[in-house]
Image (cartoon, rainbow, N blue to C red; front, side, top):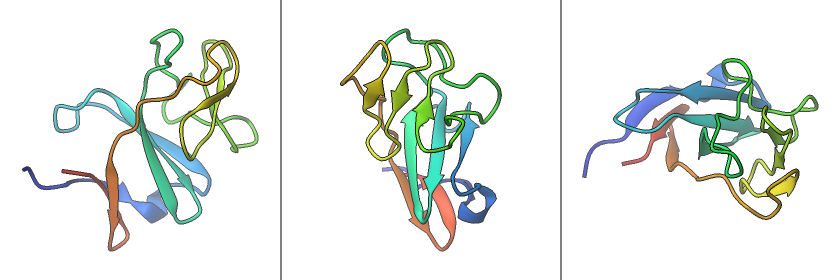
Length: 110
């Protein structure tokens, strides 16, 4: 099993906020979303269309920053479980990425 891969510090993410990652440890593009002390990771792919969710770098959240937003069809996904609650793919979910928090750092889990 490989060691966890460092991504960034928790305090480098706005609260709430998001950040995208590419070309990290052979992973498909993914992003992190912070809400308070919690961080969630998902693949950067809409389950409806297969397109990236962000419309510009690190822009994965709705205007109110309370939901994940797909830039293609305005689908809205829960931050905590990635389930679509509004838009063309209700009930479908984003593919989670396992992450770990340790000593103020965010890591791609082994």
